[in-house]
Length: 183
Length: 389
Ligand code: SF4
Ligand code: SF4
Image 1 (cartoon, rainbow over the protein chains, first blue to last red):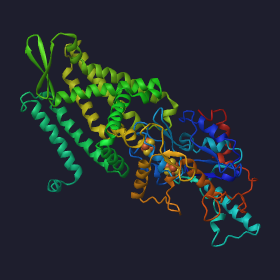
Image 2 (image 1 turned 60 degrees about the vertical axis):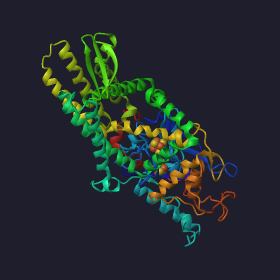
Image 3 (image 1 turned 30 degrees about the horizontal axis):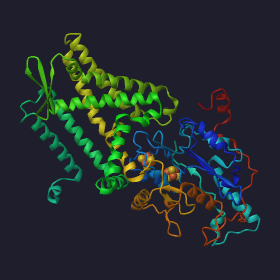
């Protein structure tokens, strides 16, 4: 897998197709594992999709007392192993983005696993394959670089040149969820 | 104590030594100085000792993890706090009954899975209990007169029973009953592992199927033993008992290092009602931003300490940590940062900045074909295959 999950929050139109698709994915047990939320409902109607970043050194796995969160060889951070998870929810609170969800009834932690059975075979995850506004994409590294360059160019065309103090405002886009193993 | 520890290569080896010594002395004590030892079971006794060493090593390493250590320390500390006695007692009894004896949470995942797990776990508990009991001599049967047996536990005489009564029958057949339960359970589990697409997504042969095969081998050879001496007059009994012994040893060696290791770590689950959630689903710590309760002070303190000890820097400019915010606020913070929507500098609680003046990438770019990762020919070939299961 050498593809990138590329999120552009601004593109999200709040249709929640990604959540519906997520519920249909294998092993997701008809529960969505991603989020679509309002930035601030009183200020704007802007929504954003949120997925797990599949961190290289995942905080969720580090705070798990049962050592239940495993990372696959492709670099995907899986949901807790059911037999080990003790249901403490440390992972939910440790994750910088509050991704892992918990089902109290069945004592199961579940989180975005990039539709492991799909991405493992280089098929786009459910959310990326249904998103109508391309807010979530599953693309090659090259394509991502191109998109980023384009963004900088457009700002230059409009006469907005990044300065030392604000250059980070112009490159907020590089937050693809990606793995770099060549399998 | 310190000196004692220094005479070992490591703490783990000290613990292993202590574990083996405890086993040895319990054996010495309960067989009244090895008089009543059952020599036929010596092979099992030795492999059980190795099993105990493996288990101790794995438990020590697991406890050494920062997260486990912190959570376990808090629970043990809480266990002996006076004000918490009642709560702890209640939590322990409830966890024992609901989660270990009845395994309610697994039944909520499905009746099939519940029955399957109950069968395997109780079958194993019965069989392990009897096997360890007999090999270490913790339990033995003495004939007190020609009609009655007495069960001796740790060298103390307990109940007596008629040699041909129903109760005696159940006791003699304990291992067979356990084996049949495990047989049903592992059969169900194997069937599920082979047919269910959902479990196939993350299952691994060596982790999820191998233990089932090992358990199955143990039970099948064990049951064959019974069949051979009851129905076939002991035909090939000797060879079979050797084969059975080999399978049991493989299982005991495998136990601490594979999936079955989840059994000894399960008791940590009591940490949740004991230290974190007094009432299940009721939170007491509120979010720094929106004020909604989302967790418990002790838990967040633990999470922050664990992260800190592993050099995770999740502190914000104003000194708060990301875990001080509820999950929803945390996600919003990430999105706002990425979209430059954060409120004006210096006022984290001000209105969001909806017009940041930055050009956002256009909506004109079509998805490239490579997006789907299939070239044209491959696509045509696969056209009538179902895309998802
Ligand atoms: S759940 Fe959170 S910490 Fe874990 S991999 Fe995903 S983003 Fe990282
Ligand atoms: S809820 Fe489960 S996976 Fe999450 S930290 Fe606790 S034991 Fe680990």
